Length: 225
Image 1 (cartoon, rainbow, N blue to C red):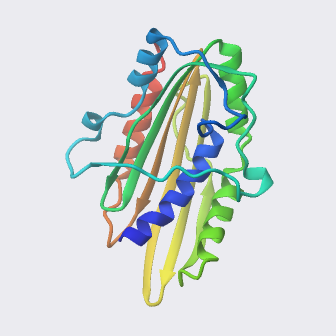
Image 2: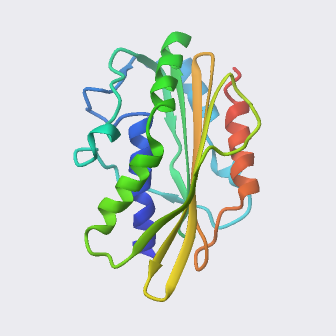
């Protein structure tokens, strides 16, 4: 189970490259945090109480840089933008499936729009595939294939909105595991928020689509100050 969970960590690294860059990266946005916007950012993200019943555990996923990523998967250059609030939930896991969310408040709506445009144009599909191919090139003995990918049908809940989903299959010998990676990103005014779910099927316990989309709705609603 730990090995399968590690495969999802690789995909999470690709998502991180599309939003907030890693610490000390010169492409990071400038940080001018203030108490009010920090509190706002923390209200946006998913909290443990939002997840409902189940053995949800705090998961500290590996922080990875993008040094070995293809050039088109590098962190975008946001160094000309200013963040005034930022929050990341601890990642929550339940039997090898994961939930992750972020909340950000920018100095101006102009900066928020610019950051969202970087995310909107990020090649999620190519980068997830590249991350998986890189992982399996190490001789894991697992065959990875994409079943389907593209936009997730979802109601319009914010002026700027992006959804992306990938369904995949992993085969190791006679065993096949199916899963999905879904992303929901919203931007309104100076604030943005996102939810990412990486869910594996049997023998893991998948995260229901109904819960995933309820969390996305919560994050979208919390962008309103």
